[in-house]
Image (cartoon, rainbow, N blue to C red):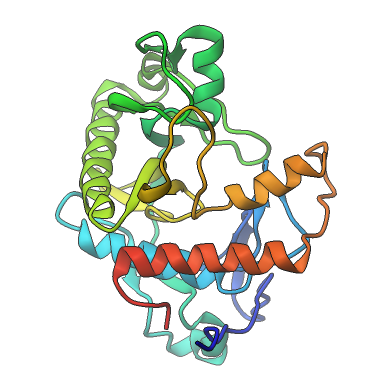
Length: 299
């Protein structure tokens, strides 16, 4: 069986004539007056540091998987996508770089809260639970093991840091920052998206352990923005290998995090380069996640 053909690697974009609004850890964002152009590059961040080694096809997987979920769950909450195909006018010269990895979206006023939903106990949630028996002020049953399924999914918001680490906060703190009506809408919408997506993914052999969403406001309407249920914003675990009591194998960048932990990197810039086998393995995990969820390989 021949290996899938990969697209050109794009670590960073530079489009003369377009106004660069900013570069995130993964995405380059251009301001087109009343719209934004969001380009998912092949950059990878781990422990909030961008690594020097790009991951082939990563940007396309993030964009195409987001588009899949945005469309599938459009009846739950409107999303910001205008088009991911028609790059005309001032975008036409850059069409080949944008193909498959960019979205033209509505411009909204982002809500300054990361909406994290956890269905299983892992990552920073597991660390918090070990210390306090709670996550974001939500008390949990005693005796839970790492990677255990929670009795029910919980909404554990965090601050949205422009640099450095996001910080877990309680629901009461969220209310204090943005008001109760919006905080309750965020919680209700996030939990509903997670429930529907988890049920769908479970039928395809994937456990969505946790995920994070971002929302924006547009004319008093709440809009789902940024990305949707990707291996960057979620923990995807293969259901047939699920074994609580330890960390799980995953379809996301946990593979890279594990490598960086193993070599003893201190998690401060500059990050070390990744060896070819870790790059290839990570690309395959992203592509596998895409294929399992959508039912077809990344084209």
